[in-house]
Length: 179
Ligand code: OFO
Image (cartoon, rainbow, N blue to C red; front, side, top):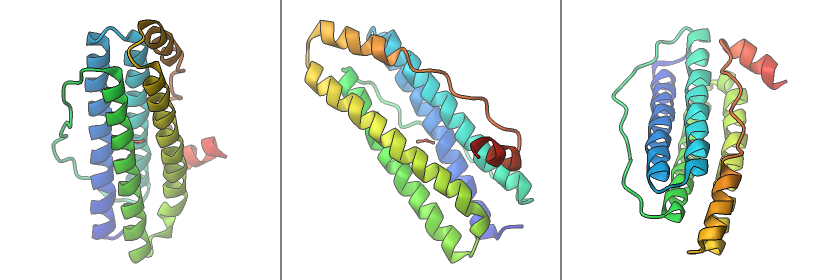
């Protein structure tokens, strides 16, 4: 069992992971409407990854005999004019999520809920990677500027992103898969 406060905090993070998936699907549609199918594919894959993140926390809740809450999923979606705007939104979103995971770690420490530590460590490592990936794309897009050739080259590169592995069905399986 975990405390009610801990369960609420994990539920809030699950909701944020679904919000992330929803945002990335909306941004995929924006990228595709701008004529960048490679970026659209990259964002669809990111949305799939966010769903696996929600699943990681859901399996943790299940394994700890806690019932998650499912408040409505909001979308911070908005129209974008350029691929650079779009990836700046991705970077800002990931920075916000890193902060949210840090706050979840604060709650876990206050509640002495050390069973969450390996999962939070996984997420913190993931956030370092995701912020770094988004930052590199933003840098490349800044260099590309308005060059159609450079933007099309980058779009092709983004389209090469591999699909994520399927989500494990339990926290124990998840741990085994990451070891
Ligand atoms: Fe859930 O990985 Fe970043 O947001």
